[in-house]
Image (cartoon, rainbow, N blue to C red):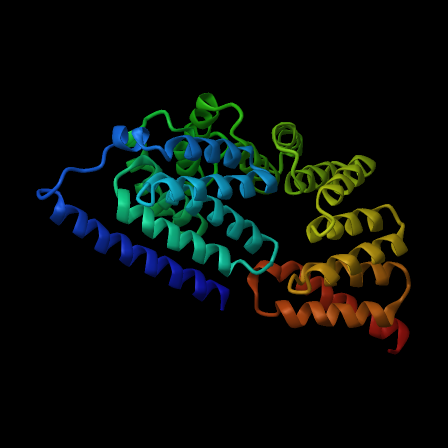
Length: 349
């Protein structure tokens, strides 16, 4: 269902871009384009620049501050395309991360769509609009059109680090790609590039040391719960369980409602053989976000290790109810079914 919603948003955005692009071409002989100098001379520009600085901090507070500044820019100049594009980027990132952790994301993708449409209306061919379009396409998993829009942004500004990041992400996130090298050469403090480079090393390459290096750099730049959570996971995969716990607790300190940190803390605790602590953390993760199936699996695993077979079976079944038929969970569903059979045989329950 959620895949269909994302596809629907993509089609709406794609059709809107086509229509607005045609209108822009038809009107090009009637009136001059609004160029970058006109944008920079707007009284809204200082607010926009503050918004970009806040956005690139890449923290929850930075995102909220960016929204505030971009809206202030629009209050000054309701036709200022970069501010709408900025809002489109912020809301797209918020929606993307909500989707990643199985939280409700549609509201933020819808806001991104609405603001990008306004950016397209007031400045179709600006770097800011094309970059926002590229980022939103990337988050909607439409890599080819994301690349096209990112290249359009780079045609306007060949030194735009974020557009190189988008090109890299849209072309497969190879850690050795010249696109990510260029992005970080232009902006060594581009948090989104360090974060995704860490994820690429962690999940694609299995190079945990390099993943940790990138996550540590990201955390130095942006003290956010998400980044501490990824750093904790990278440390856990290398067996640094105590350090991993420290990072998850930092994430929770920054955001007591950040469910993924509780889930990962629970996983770490059962790796440390402290099963009751693990159970408590997984239950907390579920209380914060009952739509994510993974904490049910890890709660069941903790109960199984704690020799509580009935509770283990119950939570494995809840996990399977969420995940049966979903390819991404194939290994975990196989493990859950095997555990249920074993537990039934051993406890007669």
